[in-house]
Amino acid sequence: MKLYMTANSPYARKVRILARELGVADGIEDMAINPRDPETGIWALNPIGKVPALELEDGRVLVESDLIAAWLARGAGDDTWLGPRFLGDTERNALLGLANGALDRGMTARLEEARPGAEDTADVIEKNYAGIRRIFDAAEQRAVVRPDPDYADIALVTGIDWIALRHPALDVHASWPGLSAYGAELSHRPAFAETSPKG
Ligand SMILES: N[C@@H](CCC(=O)N[C@@H](CS)C(=O)NCC(=O)O)C(=O)O
Image 1 (cartoon, rainbow, N blue to C red):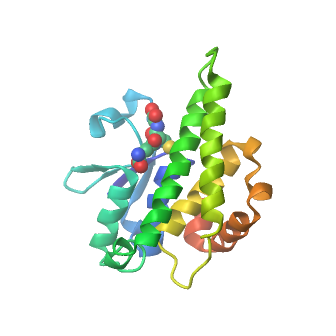
Image 2 (cartoon, rainbow, N blue to C red):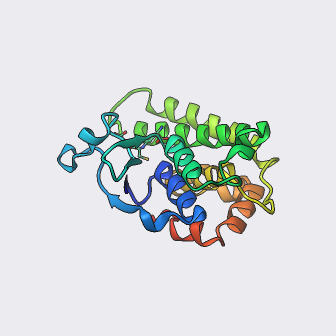
């Protein structure tokens, strides 16, 4: 299988961490591409034009990080990371939703930073930063390293790391020391360490 990704994409990283934790990463080749470049063929594979996209051996293509992750977990017979136990746990699903929301707000703010000359850029960025602050305030109380980490932990650590890298103005590690310590502890796991975003 081929996973179309960029090295620092947080959405792709969720899938890459999960694949490693499930022990199925050897069957997946990471294909680093620029999703905005149609010459890479990504638009034909994934009409949304985004990464991650997982091309299966029979040529079918799965898109959207959480759907790819759920498909991998099911194929691996997983019950811990994103299996029936996770899906039946309301609290863990709620935390996953918050983590995904932080990523979406961070991505919107980043796209806005790249929109030159727009009058409301500062306003749009601040609205999204305010959303991230609310999300991280709420998540900090729930961010506890448990004996069996799951996909909500993967998503939250991915959000913490990527927002700390791409939005230094939020000063993530100083502003949310609980989240920072939680992320650091989970980052000792090889699957997290191997995929961590680089500046
Ligand atoms: N909801 C999607 C979001 C994926 C996404 O936004 N990927 C970004 C990279 S981190 C992308 O490919 N952006 C290309 C673009 O916006 O043109 C998912 O969960 O997979």
